[in-house]
Image (cartoon, rainbow, N blue to C red; front, side):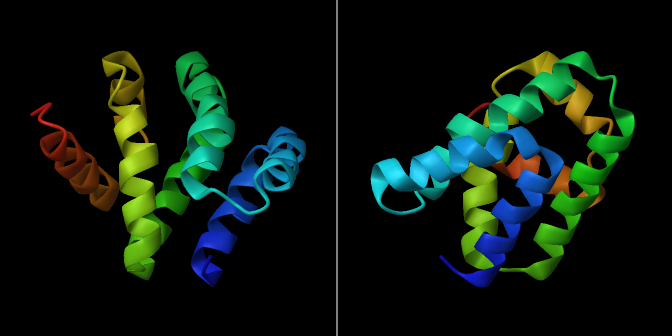
Length: 122
């Protein structure tokens, strides 16, 4: 795992402190950080929950600003993981995706469209 990936997981745990225990348990269970498992099974359910409620606007704004930063770093590994986990999962539910689009920056929107095209949803 590179430094940007580590930073991503640390930052997401700052946004969702309740995921820390599950994150550590996952590492213990698998003996390493399985990036897609952590994102899909631990982090994304929390993000989807916040998006579904659409009440914590400040948190959502911070998260999606951070997503723009991730893209700006131009780390191919992190961007690939971000695209095939976070963005694809957001697109699984149109109502969630529409809410997420309210907070997405321009680069995240472009990547979301590409993820949707890659999956044949557009």
